[in-house]
Image 1 (cartoon, rainbow, N blue to C red):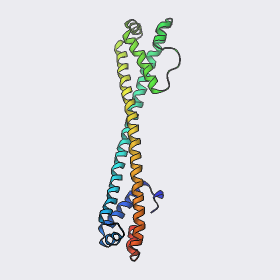
Image 2: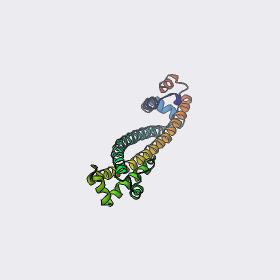
Image 3: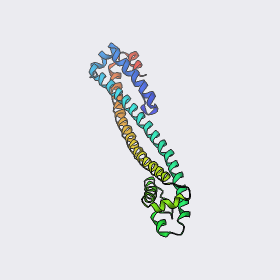
Image 4: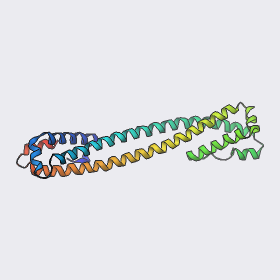
Length: 214
């Protein structure tokens, strides 16, 4: 069995068939048992196979949660950006001649590029407007109410939480992938050794050995 030429699903299907035949056929059990692969050892191979199945399912679940979290973050990020840029543009107009406010709200210069720093920049903008009632009142004349600012800040905190969730799901997916890879390698090694022994044990029964080479 050339593992490198098989997809994961094909490999697992073939291993399932191989183990099923090995455990259920008394002649094979007796033959390989004389060379160290008794029923207990065959069961160990089956247990290793089922462990890989479980880890694959866990990896798939972790990947789904990762994709879902990233999709949610992307949508909320776009929404927050739209709200923030609208308020930013209006604030630049409202405080055109006030260098103190412009500096405090970071109205000038480029926006941060990394998500974490950008979130902090938006949070600073919103929190300072909420703290300084006069500044918030100035924006009200341009259609930006304090309730809209609070709504923005609520979304910002949700975005921060979802960004953290994205990091966590990414690490979880990475961990599950590493665990699966480790156990899959162990299963491949077990199957490789078993087939070598089975070939020797079934030398007088080539038809039985052919059944194992599924």
